[in-house]
Amino acid sequence: MDALLFRTPVHAALLGIDISSSAVKLVELHVNQERHFEVVTYAVVPLPEGAVRDHEIADERAIANAINEVLKKSVSRYDNGVGY
Image 1 (cartoon, one colour):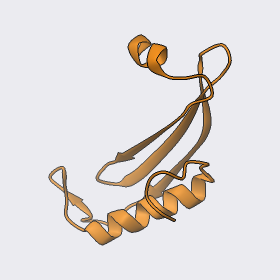
Image 2 (cartoon, rainbow, N blue to C red; image 1 turned 180 degrees about the vertical axis):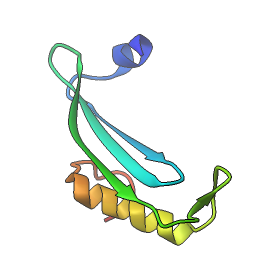
Image 3 (cartoon, one colour; image 1 turned 135 degrees about the vertical axis):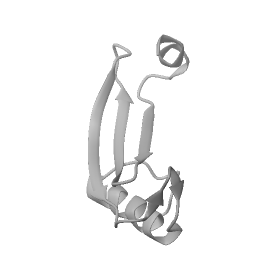
């Protein structure tokens, strides 16, 4: 983690999205003046049953909809990724 921190400019925004078999989760981090990560926002959107099977995306449309929904729900300021 220290290697990432040293390469991350102050006030940088980092966006993490986790797709599991049950939900899409989002966390947005900012680096403050002290070069510490701060959680700015997070959100979780449940997935319909069967959208992910055996660690593989089975329903691309459901996943795309969930990603768009989690971005809206989080009120993320990130605008360089999936359009919403």
